[in-house]
Length: 205
Image 1 (tube, rainbow, N blue to C red):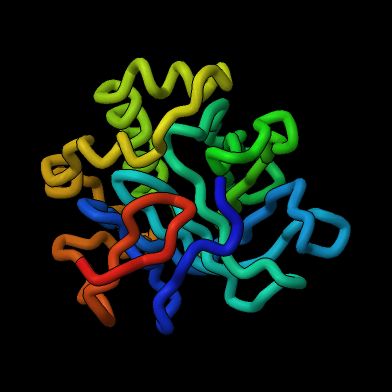
Image 2: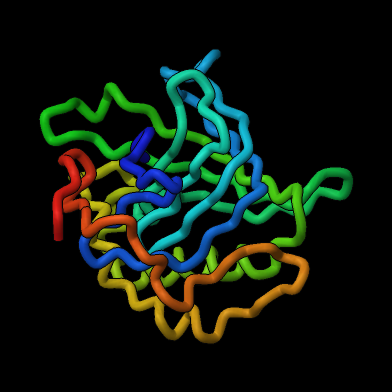
């Protein structure tokens, strides 16, 4: 995970080299713990989820303290589960490991618990695409995913860029009750800025 990743002015995450965005889903409620910049170190707010072949990024409608976005590398997500409670809205819950800078001690960083709640509309498009994509990322990066889950030697979250997503997007089921927007073409960026790693600034591609 990485708190407050770089965004364009329209709220779209600044992409990494080779990154392909699969979908955007607004109107979700997002919960995540262990956020030092948020009141009580816990965030509960509404916004938009962006899903790519590398990561899932939540962008808040309004900042919560100093928190405005949260980046979850797919290789660092584990224990994800689709929940369908009887008296509450459908949601996805799980855990995500931190993206630790090379010069930092892993022991200083905690695993985060997250939840994505679908309070506005269905989720029949988002959930299958998310689960299929994360399974595909693990298949194509089997060693790296296992290492990340076990918090073994450091894993580059950008390894997931080699996961093919074109076919998956073309055959995605579109739920008419789900307001998820699928990117059949990549959204036009505001600039040629691209990120090369998780901890460095973006530069022109």
